[in-house]
Image (cartoon, rainbow, N blue to C red; front, side):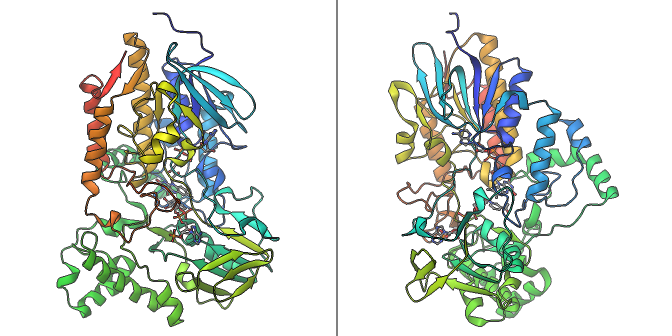
Length: 538
Ligand code: FAD
Ligand code: N01
């Protein structure tokens, strides 16, 4: 059957790591494609999150594309853990090096995409009024790209400056002489707080959940080390493929990888404390039982609290900084001088578990017990993760069914690559994929290459559609749920974005696949080897 008329083979939504590589692969297999991107620049996460202190927690040498030996060798990383400006520069370098810009349309948001069952095409409309017909649609919209406004009364009544870490102004912000509030102590809050504190006249940190944060071991890379690392690329990339989190060198959490030999619950207190002396912050968690058993995790958290008390001088502040949920429930943060910041005279911690926010007022923030005046409020309040960006687009599959409705009850997905009922629509790092539990660049490359191979296969075999089977999708979801059942990451005290628990009304389901990168990679490869098992090709 001849193809129905269409403008493009593929529409790609987003121009971060995923969208850029997808465009490149589509060109390689001879398909026409365009990427639409809301931002005024490319880079996705690394374009939007330009808050002070923003930095990667995976080593630069690994948080980078592996598909091009030339790019690996041509680009020079300057630091072990790259900062936001450096990753943004890297992505712009890749974009130019591969001449991708001519197929990227910036400042254009995809607002709807509708599948035509007769023609097997997608009709895509954009915020600029464009209407494009494509055979395939790729959501490269990111797992952490839909900003979440906090559910606080009076949010928009504030008369000073409101800043969001995930939409930070490109010109930056000089906090000198200002009275500043930061709401939120996840990764973005923890990274920005020390930098803001060093500039501001005063800083009040509004903390609901205390953070688990470990010191970033970043440092400059000199020319000799860089040359050695570049020479070791093949070996590093091979090791990534065999590592659970797709990191050979494990970024900030390297010491956690060393096998623990003792259970914290069987170790006398004095010896527990010696572990802190020997291993620092990681000594709190390097036990055989600390990440698997709730009672043991509480003991590990108590040790972590001891580390905090060793740094933070005010006992009440130190006590408030100890989390009340297990390590591993949320993504651990990395920081540069976070706890030391609370010893500064201009910094105050407001513990919202004891004194909750009532409202934001025209002049500041009112809690149950206090009223504060600010010049600036920085919201480090996170994202509607994994499903948020695609739910904000009116995507309609078979029978006019809306993706937003499907995902209102469950973040369904087969392998995190497709959703049953939405033919010829692919999600890069969608729900049900390891994505956010790994070095995401490795996960993104795996998905993009899988999708490109799949499209080449459809071309070669003359198939017009590919679609996940509901039965395969259900089995995959059950398998994913079985893996996390009973884990601390789904413990009742856990309110992570992995579980959707940070978004009011979102179904509580653990969204990423926790079986690890190697097992997942083998699965997606075996699906192809078995003739796209679990998919219908027509
Ligand atoms: P994104 O980079 O999020 O890009 C998606 C793009 O799609 C965005 O630019 C967005 O504007 C665009 N878009 C969305 N909807 C639409 C629409 N309707 N129309 C048009 N465009 C749209 N991962 C790690 O592995 N290690 C790290 O250290 C790490 N650090 C991080 C730090 C921060 C601050 C954040 C927020 C995330 C971090 N991540 C990290 C995760 C990070 O998101 C991924 O590593 C990676 O950058 C994702 O790339 P992406 O292209 O899939 O998505
Ligand atoms: O967002 P978050 P983030 N009132 O959701 C609080 C990646 N990342 O942008 O936990 C008061 O983690 C909320 O409190 P609680 C990384 O994967 C990586 O910081 O819901 N507080 C929490 O403290 C990360 O996990 C890096 O109780 C409110 C904070 O806001 C992900 O992105 C750097 C509130 C949100 O924390 C998201 O990180 C940055 C309210 N109404 C980001 N609403 C690296 O270093 C929310 N909060 C790699």
